Image 1 (spheres, one colour):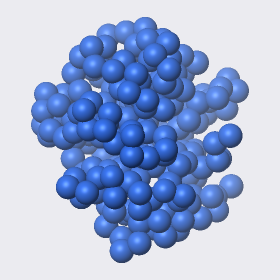
Image 2: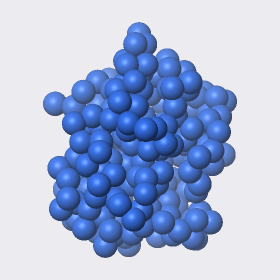
Image 3: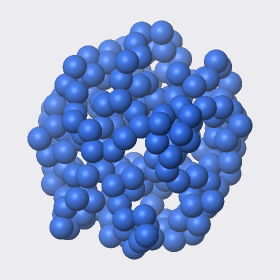
Amino acid sequence: MEPSQIIAPSILAADFARLAEEVHAIEGAADWVHVDVMDNHFVPNLTIGLPVVQSLRKATSIPFDVHLMITDPERWAPGYAEAGAYNVTFHAEATDDPVALAKTLRAAGAKAGLAIDRDTSVEPYLDLLPHVDTVLIMTIKAGFGGQKFLPETLDKVRAVRRRITADNLEVRLEVDGGIAADTIEQAAEAGADAFVAGTAVYGAQNPAEAIRKLRALAGGVG
């Protein structure tokens, strides 16, 4: 059973030369490892890809939460599921048939996540919630780490939470962008139950302790 609140440190903020060690530093504290895959097409940045995920998967037992900020996710997403990712999230803006892609990911052995970027309305996607396992609301513009949290994006979190509650769905509601000690409570109050934190964890002297503090702040709501 997963805990009621998920803390998913983003290795985008880790030392890429020491990725295995950086992941080991959060073992026993983190619930998921958030892996940001960017392709320099869908977003203007370029990060890691499937070979790194395959290698890193062998180095830790923490579930991988792979966030695909890429074009043509139909082509690439199943490979991440086959590589052992627990959850594979693709962007609504990058696919014409999110339901079909979610089915493909589930068939490949992963949970399916749908990401909504900062400037995208969530309303057109609310009816798709029964077909996915995770909804990821970007609380920044996708593509760069270290951005400032945008509280106005929490209206989308509230809208998704209302639909999840109304329809009694088992869907994780994740937030990504600027999540730290001074913002995580707002996100939890809006209805999020999974929190991606990059700099707040890997910028701390003790990443595991930083995770515990974030969990306490998120779990103290409600």
